[in-house]
Image (cartoon, rainbow, N blue to C red; front, side, top):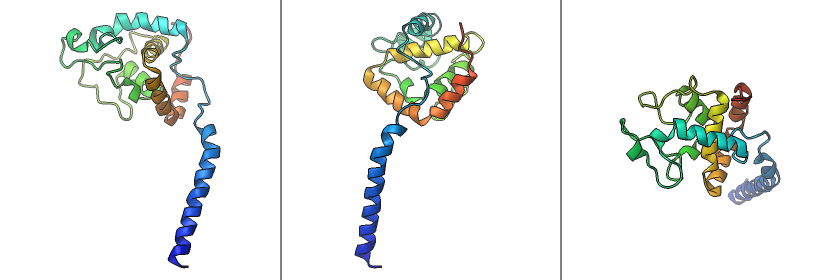
Length: 171
């Protein structure tokens, strides 16, 4: 087979793959389950805001505006901001829950075993942890939430599994 025929076949195959992707991708990119952090739920966001103020602000600072964590956290390195100047949105929901609850790090998270980050699994219920994280997500811009949702699509199986494992009834 000549070189030009091989190139033509490769180009044709790539075009067919591209056409197939156009028809399949809208269905693949839609989440199939309920979101773990449903930032549109006003009651959850309100509960989370209260808990954040009680449990998190002393280290992470207030979310609205520039990070205050350097001023607030006097112990060691400042905890990262959860606001627009932070990187919380770069982690899927299940990883944020895992980190907050147990201090264990999921894929792509920095190791917090040597930090002052407490394990909140004993102090807060699963419902309360999800409420706090939902509040945090509610403060992000639409653009950041969309990026976070795209990351969550890559981890939809893990997010669904964690949602099913958590005790989210009551507080």
